[in-house]
Image 1 (cartoon, rainbow, N blue to C red):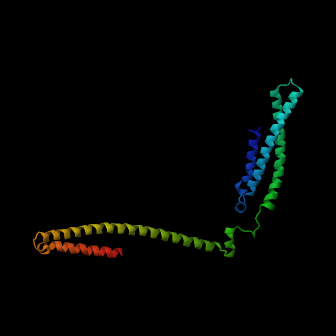
Image 2 (cartoon, rainbow, N blue to C red; image 1 turned 45 degrees about the vertical axis):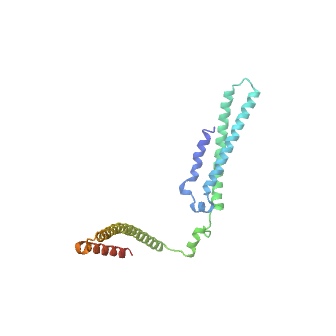
Image 3 (tube, one colour; image 1 turned 45 degrees about the horizontal axis):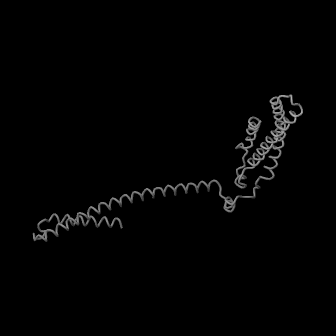
Length: 221
């Protein structure tokens, strides 16, 4: 009986949870939907009724077997199962009719939210109501701000990439300046005269490198 009758009732009870009848605002207010509450009551009744009928079934079979020991126990169990299923169907129909009235009463009288009762998150809307035009304007402004923010993020990434490239170039220029300075020092130590007089282009390269390095530093600043 638990495998057939109870499963059939479960499908019928799920009709209570039809999306078209769900009261979502009440669900936010109470933390559950009125239909969910009724479904739990219905499921509890099902479980209780199934358990009781199984016990009644066993008791009836035991009493009948004790009264007439010649009867086949399997046949008694089969007849008891048929009777309990008929009783289950009868009680189920009665409870369904009763649950519909109880559902209407609870949903309309107990679990309905009056228009003047608001959730804490909705109370600011009462103080500063806005029409659809204002809402669309706010959403448009929000979209524009998000787009501008995204553009700034992209520009920031490009700027960081450019600064990293300039840092690498500056390190290369610093290396060239150090190399020229070391070459001048070594030239003087060997007593070969003035490095700038012997290699005029080298001095021009050094000045050009130093000038480029100064420009890069000013751009970073």
